[in-house]
Image 1: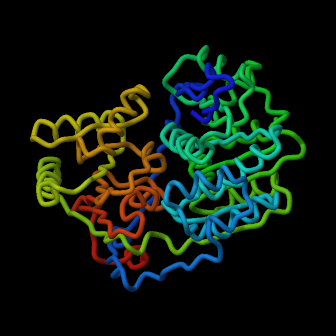
Image 2: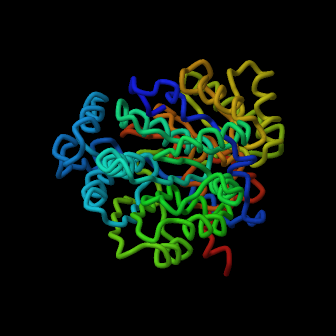
Length: 413
């Protein structure tokens, strides 16, 4: 919750986990990119070889509201990351921003700090934040709560897991910040329970992921409803032609801040595991988990059914594991993620719904039990490991019958 004032205490619990029916479940029609296994192999650079970023600013230097600055410093934050250092000054100046940065580099604070500063100072500005998954929306909510503590700002969270009536009740309080997923936000606009014409700030987080998931129509619908004069933040890990068209259509003279350092994190060691048949595949996963039994591992599988089947098999083999996917209720997903974060379990099996929405800084290993649909999906998956400067490990399972040491361009001759 944002509100922590004594004036209207009954409105403290104004951020509820409100519901989008099946957030993050849309697909690209099952198309699978042909990715040569050699692209899943890369040695991690030693820590001393990774370039150390030296920011131009400190958080204390930013011209932001004293309450906001105090909350940031109280969390122990002194120096901003590269995307924060470069984007926050433009946001405070009122510019539209296109932010491109690797996963796990602090994009949330890069838009949340100037967004909240504007709302606290004016008391009239309102912000819409759109995210592709429930987990990412909740992560953004948590960050905003922390930064805005004691400000009296109220908000609504519109994602899956609670009834429409609960969401409508939150919206009746005229929240200054609405965070949600595209489909659910569109539902409310069409019902007349959410009016976006007076929203003066819009944030699209993980734009490339939302476009991949088929949300382009919903996004365009929402952007068309906004106030004619508004500030926009479009943040993403990649910038492709689809996103470029969206930027050109809806942003006004944007500044592009790009701190992306490469296709994948340099501090993630990447390798493959060749298997022969279903039984061999499971046995090799079992062996891999035994070798790293004290580590925190995120395993990706392709479908809700396969995730359930794999998690139950691992549980039967004695591993502490939970599953998370779009077919789970929001409460089930929250409980599984909480167990993983708090080290009650050390293995989480997930579909790609978790690739962008899980913010657990101490994940050490990512295992692609099923291959990702695209190389971009691979990047987002393994980006869950090796965060905050740590060395991470990524393993991708490859059917030996489809494996060749020759690069793809040689095989096509």
